[in-house]
Each structure stands twice: as structure tokens, then as C-alpha cells.
Length: 493
Figure 1 (cartoon, rainbow, N blue to C red):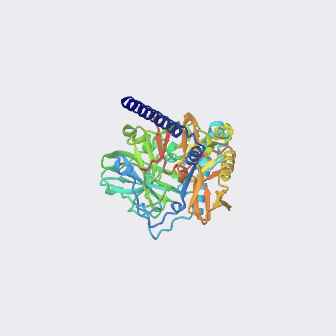
Figure 2: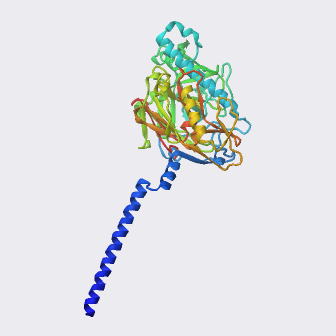
Figure 3: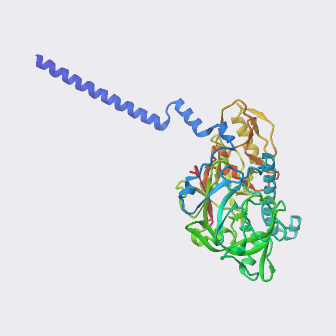
């Protein structure tokens, strides 16, 4: 009897243990399903808030000018990479305590001048194609975009090499630097002006060469002759200019990336808003651009990340080394054929995870391009109105305030330590969806005036421009040979 009772107790314990194990397994399965499918409304709401908004420390929008320079590991660890610095930032070689940086209003004024120059150049291309007779209605020398750039790299030029700070510009083709002797005028630059007579690898290009004949497409002006040497002249939209000899020289990017015989402009008469830098590195699409001249090594592929703060560096990398596997590509559009620019097809925009109702023709009629030198992205009027309306609706908890210059949607964030803003994503042809970094949405003047970093074009026929504020922290990949541009997040790390 005792033995029988003991057996029953053992069987009951086994049943209870098996039941407990089954219940525990069910609980684990249910929890797993909940975690994967956000079965609770609270989890869904938390996930929605996480993916549809950014919370930013406001102090990060106003970095201290005394902040130490933080170097990009990508630029430090990749053989074909250069450090990218903000022209007026802590990390820049050319920053001078005595030189006053332009204020925000001046930056935006210059930015609008660059945009006007780009639109003029595109309009001239279209006019030349459709009605040649009316091209005289546009400026005669609008072959290049505005001369004020924000981001700088250091390149070694000559033998022995001289390290010189150059603005890099995807909207320009010809690379040029200031050279001795300055026969008329040279603007002020931080580093010693390059003297070609001190370089054993320098020589002028003949005015009968194919390179000299290519100047017309690269600069908007045909080459001329001086004692059988080719003379270039390039004028920018603000009347800045560089005039000098087309020459060949050794360019040293890094110790293992050295190029002989690179065509460049050795400018002996230079004027404009390039103060501080030695010249410009042209990254456009013409055959005289630096990517085209180094195509045998890099296949016209380069990438960059623009730092979100002046106290950080980004990178400019030539070739496919280190490119993220998560890059999403979109084809280069045909709107910019025959120009320096890299065209894009924007097909939509979303704010806070909700796609805006914008008719496709709003983007397809004027077209779009990406530009490293334009600060604030420009959108067709109807697209900008939709973006502004949706953004303001998501920012209703913050007080509106007056606009500044081209920026008309601003907020007074006085008293806040953080700000929660909706995500903004761009949809491009080919299925690429690019979510902007949290620093690519706002432009901060002061705590009481923080603005949406977009502006509308005045004419619905003017091209949209994807500017450099929106590009900050993204890895932007230009694949000239493949005819595509790509984007990936967290590109400066």
C-alpha cells in the first residue's frame, strides 16, 4: 500500500513537472512572438516612436569652438583616404584665429548665389539643346558653379611635394591651385603659394594638345595660347576667377597613392571667396576632372562622409576600398548629361515615416542633382510646401519663431535640453530609400532660432539640389563608371 502510494506520488510529480515545462515553453513562445511582432500596443508605440523620430541633445547643435579635433577612423585606416575637414573648423589646417568665419546669414547668401549659378548652368544646357538662339539671354561665362566651398582636403603636389589645402567640389571639373608668380593678383592663403620652378615634376601643357581642347567643356571657356603654352580661365557665378597655365604635375594623396602627370591649373591671377585655401579639387564628370584622370586606378569611384560638426573630420576615399555593404544605389539621371553634375531622380519624401502626397511630376519635370558645395537642399515649391507642412505638424509642441534668410520654418527651443524631431527620408529611383542623419534636418542659428534645413526653389522648373547639410554623416558613393550614386548611414566612422 505504501509502495503504491509512493508510485502515485512520483507519477503526479512527473505530470506536474511536465505540465510546468509545457507552460514554460508556451510562455517562451508567446514572449518570442511578442518580441518579434510587437504584440503589445505599448511595444508597438515605442517602436514607432523610435523609428519615426530622433531625439537630439541641443548642445550638440552648438559645438564649442575649443572642442578637440576627433579624427575619422575610416580616413586614418584606409590607404586611399583623405581627412575631410570643415573649412572654418577646429580640425582645419587653414583655420586662423585672426580670420573671422562668415556668419550664418552670409553663408546662406553665398549658398543662394551658388544655387542660382547651378540653375543658370542647367538652364543654359537645356536652352542650347532646344533653342540655340536664346542662349544669349544667360550669363556668357557661367561655366562653373559658385566659388565658395565648405569642405577641405590636403593633397601633396609637386616634387618635392607641397601639402596644400583644397576645397573639393563635385560640381567642378578642373583642379587648380594658386601659383607663383602672381602676375596680377592672388588672394590670401594660409600655406605658401606653390612655386612651379621649385618642382622637378612640373611642366606646362601645349596649346595644341587634346587636354587644352578639353578646357571648353571643363571650364566653359576655350583654352588660349601663350608662347605655345595652354592658358586656362575659369570664372565662377560670383565673379571669382582663376587664370593661368594648364600644366601636368605629380599629385600625392597618400604615400601609396601617387599619380604622375595630372592635368591641373596653375593659377597666376586669382580672385574671390577662396581665401585660406590653396585652390580646388574638381570631382565632376568631365574628362579633366580628378576622378576621370585617375580612372585607371579607381575606375571613377570615390566616396565621402561630411562630418556633422566642425570638430570632427570625415573622409574622401578614392576607389572602392572600405565602401559599406549597406550602400543603396540610384542611377545617375540624364538631366545633368553634358555638365559636371551628378543627377538624381527623387521620387518621394517621407516625414515621420509617412510618405508625403507629392505628384511624381513635381520632381520629374525639373529633375535633381547632388552637390557637395550647396549647403541647404532645395526642393520644388510644391514638394517643399508638403515637407514644411508635415514637419511643422510633427513639431507642434515647440514654439514657432521668425525665419532667417532662405529658411522660413524655425523654432524657439529656449529652455529645452533635447528636441525630438521627425525622421526625414528621400526615395530615389531604383528603390533606394535614404533616411537622413539626425544632424541633416536642422540648421541652428541660436537656441531661440533652430530651423528646418530645407528651402523651396522660386521656380518649379528649377532642379532640386540634395545639399551638404542633408549629406552629413552619410557615406555618399559616386560610381562614375557604373553610372550610379549610393548612400549608407554612419559613413564617417
